[in-house]
Amino acid sequence: SQYYGMIGNGKISVYQFDLINKNIRLSKSFPTNEGCFDVTWSETNDNIITSCQGDGTIKFWDINSKNTFPIANIS
Image (cartoon, rainbow, N blue to C red; front, top):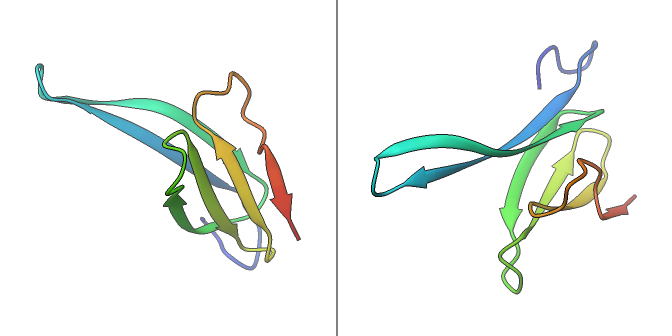
């Protein structure tokens, strides 16, 4: 999160590593209105990540979804 406390947004980026070609590529990107301070994978679903935002919210993201909106939000 650039310029925390003044102005600016955050972004969550998910990368994949290709073992055969030995390269890294951007798999999915989620823009956020606030800075993102922590991200974790779901222990029960490999396609879900959870983030803690600078505004105190917790957001759930589906990396297989076609849109970039969170699938759930806890305030």
